[in-house]
Image (cartoon, rainbow, N blue to C red):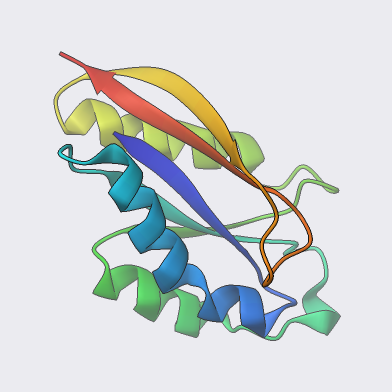
Length: 122
């Protein structure tokens, strides 16, 4: 199983929530292991950056995952992020199958959280 774990590089709070999001996603795929790619999005807003690339790379390394920065607005690395995640899933021994679910808004966020997981089919 694999997933993209996204945070907003212009919002330190979103970066601080990565650990909680990671644990929550892992709880939804038990007993399977999960491969993640940490994605810092909005890299087109460099002047508003609150999280450095070095901080994000360090966190990704601590969790044994790769890090990439993307911009949906400028189409930077979006396709590459999915390609890299798919490669990691294939390397773990399976074929990818995409599944998504939505978590309703919480007190911490007024927006719903969408989880899309690529799982391996053996």
